[in-house]
Amino acid sequence: MFNFLMLMLSCTLLRAEEVHFINGNILPDFEINASPVSELLVKDGKVLKTGNKLGTNPGVQQVDLKGQWVIPALTDAHAHLLATGEETRKLNLKNRTLEETLDIITSALKTSPTPNCVTGFGWDQTLWPQKQFPNRKLLDELSGKIPIILFRVDGHAAWANTLALKKSGLWDSPVTQFKEQIPRDREGLPSGIILDAALKPLEDIIPPASKNEVQGDIRRFVKQALRLGITSIHDAGIKEKDLTILKDLIQTEDLPFRFYEMLDASDPSALKEQLKRGPLINSINGRLTARTVKLFLDGAMGSRGALFSEPYLDDSNTRGIQLISETNLEAQIRQISEAGFQVAIHAIGSQANHIALNTFEKIKTKGLHLKRPRLEHAQVLIANDIKRAGRLGVIASMQPIHCTSDSRWIIERIGSERARYAYPWRSFLNENVTLAFGSDSPIESLNPWPALFAATQRKRSHLDSDPSFFPEEKISIREALFAYTSGAAFGAFQEKMLGSLHPGKWADFIVLEKNPLLVSPIELQQVQVRATYFAGRKVFDLKSSSTN
Figure 1 (cartoon, rainbow, N blue to C red):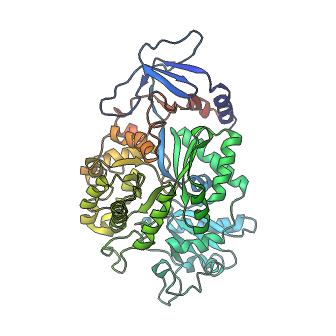
Figure 2 (cartoon, rainbow, N blue to C red):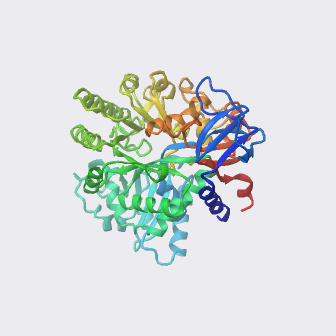
């Protein structure tokens, strides 16, 4: 931690100096015809020029890159800042069997000093033998005196005991309220699984994080991201009070990171006030922007909340959940856009994406110009809607690792015909749709390098015996890195300041041992960032980190 703070102090004290990076293999961008140069000149934290044999003034500080490769720093175009940072404060249930999950909860109940609520994140019933949602009775056997709330790995479902359901008011909620978002057991009682919009009452009984805890979560996220070569995030939903904490922390601690915030639309009154104030753009020296509002149109496939026009193959009783009516969606998009904000719609199932595109098209024909509308996830579409996305100038904000994670069960869930256009990266690019890649952390790992492998290989491992998931949708490593840099910058209106190492842009870059465009697939999964630079100054060094 000491080295991390010292690097941040160095970033503050030396930012105004001119720095000449020499003897490198520098890729300024990932355009098709881009070729490496050996030198980079930085002044006031921005790129002054790149090239070979650059002339500089006497006394300019030089940094010898010793033949290492330099590329633009990465942007995670869809992650959850605070949820990722707080992972260490919740029970980690990722990749656990049902028995292991129950053991972890039992241990927490025994060792935690009188907890007000036991919370955890990451369980996934598709990894369990029966692949079925668990029942509240399993948790009731562990405790009837302490609420237990465990969020599924996709964040769109929770498993709760009876006490938690009663405290939240969901136990006595009428069957008509939330409809299929509170599944019932054979006795007509809540089963213990809560979905999507019905999660809010459960979340409300969890003790809120303190200001110090939120600050700690942000610091942990930044430290982890810099280690991975990420210097910017598109944070997929933040509440007003947390945005205030974030802004203060950036200013007081000079955080070497860029935050592009999507406002949380779950509180209409708070959102109304934020829209009145208008967007916050490139504040604190380009480190904080809040100009997007995120809306949820459906849920996730793992919990069968993603919306389709036909039922799920493995559950004919549901075709998913539509969280906003078409009428309300149009009204909200108009309100958001007219206030000067970008619209980002969470849409996973093909019907949700169809409705979102219908609404974008309808609004456009009525004369309102939408500002680079985003589809967050855009996981499953029909072929005609992929073409429409291109015509409408939609940004497809996608997470490549979801493809390989979901490929274990997606055919069983929605069938091969619908799955053909799941994660359709090549089809999107063929229609000139801008891809902006991210992780969806903490639902998936923040690490971009396995995600880049997923984008180029569409399979879970490098083994020849592991088949690719619809390999015709593969993209090249150059295209995938473009989506993590220039594509993400365009999706945030930041193409003039980020995404490449062109003159006038921030000198945010990373140092690698090898050319990422030429490494083998197995090497791509295991890339280690040697150093990360923010505004021209080193904020992570692998050698220093290894001694901590």
